[in-house]
Length: 265
Image (cartoon, rainbow, N blue to C red; front, side):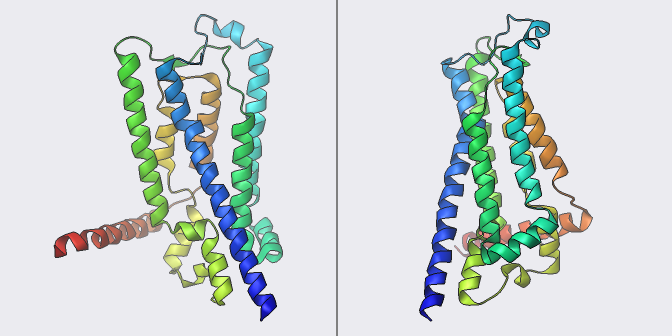
């Protein structure tokens, strides 16, 4: 009994610490990919690009090529980790090793790879921007518009994650069920729900695409980041008509659930 209690507390502690790390990494990612670029564009604190340099000269600059090579390596690291640990043979091995902490380990390594990417990312400031809004009055209004749309997109992303059972996505539910002896939480889901989750673990493709591309200035390193992550998101799911129909039904039922208290008033 005592050993079971200690094991349960250890599992819960690991799961909650991982949740905190993933939450902090998510907040850092929002700052990194969204608000930092817009803030720098509004304040002009840093020079994102050098539009006076021709492309032919910029692409021969060793510092530009070195930064792009480092950034590409970081993106390869992140996408490789994210895909390799989701590969069925690897998942089976990790399941046999970590048990109920399998999903926790996956989220932890994803957040760790993301932290490494953000920590060592090299901005390319020695090349022109692909576009840059710097003429009045749009140099003020367009960044504010981007900030508003980014804020709305992140709010939608958080709402969608709530609807997609985020405790299960982060591995908390697996540990909770393990401690109570309830087995795998996905076993209680309907076949249609399990099918949807196997095809779509990234339910934020459109909103994240807006965040990646809608900026007042698009630098060369941002093009690499946005292009790579957009391609990865596009290839990471395989939704079909049945998945879409189930998803529409679930969204409609959730909306009716939220509207019910208002109707009772």
